Image (cartoon, rainbow, N blue to C red):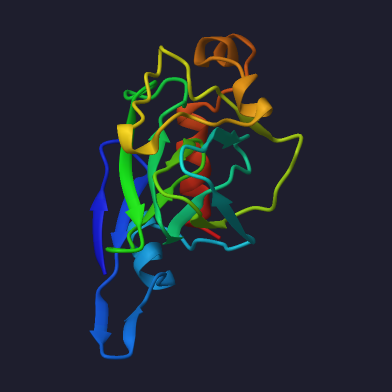
Length: 201
């Protein structure tokens, strides 16, 4: 499995080696030891989520309070999405910046997004099926959003996605500036300290 660190601290891309023959393809989509060696602590799997999206659907930007936060290991089992990691940690040297990674059923890469970072994706194909392995169960009071249409963040959706389709919740989410003013955003130093504490568990 190949590992690539992104420019935003705490985000990594994992690309598995695929074995093909006349029966099809086999691969290791997740290896706990590779992930642990990369992030510096055990990834505690608490919940697995799956979404199936029409082309053009945008999900996010979503994030959770830290602690406990919610780290994510995201894969696209069918179709293709453009996945975004957004640094919303107050005090981070890359605050407000984002990177995107194509996840699809061809190279079958996964993206790991650590606690404190924002996450979103846009579906590039019909029926894009995304699986999320997450480190904490869903907590409606501890999870928040920032609108993916915030011009200050400036996410770029590719033409192949077509018109963007968002849920009312994501459309009505605050901008980054509004979330900052409301005290909703994770703190960079607190997020790093929490991740460091995981290594001692």
